[in-house]
Length: 181
Image (cartoon, rainbow, N blue to C red; front, side):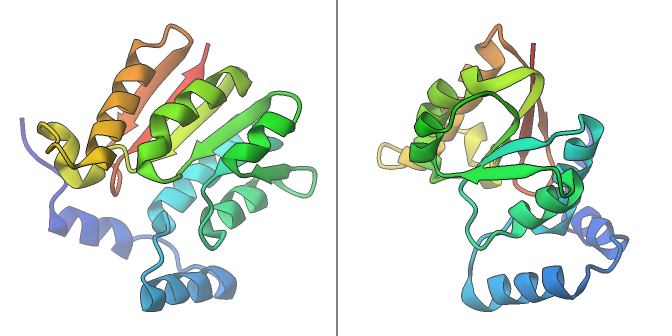
């Protein structure tokens, strides 16, 4: 197997992306200056495309940091779309969602799985960022590495679920896209 996720491939991928508008560029600059984690423009474009592909209008985002991924999805959903936030609010928000995007603290991923999957409509998407965790998911987690252990457990839960059809995309830090059956 040939490894394609090299620094050169990453550089190329980002070099061909269209220039972002002033708002997205400002958010990217702020994130870089203040060490705020964001999904970045390649994943942002993928999220927007997934929203468009299933015509998602009801989206729940878990873990929005500065709202970068929110902006990508909101623009793709259009003026008739609605994005809701926060894991605790998921319990108090009624109805199913077209997309649930998960990017919370990594130790919380298994809990998100247990709470969120049942809230995705049939044919909807359950999307999670950082599922390759800089490659750490490929080896046994150290005893004190709760994040890696949680992501490994989460990935196994998604792939073992009869309700989901998951695909782990090796874009940036790994994006797990699951279609709800």
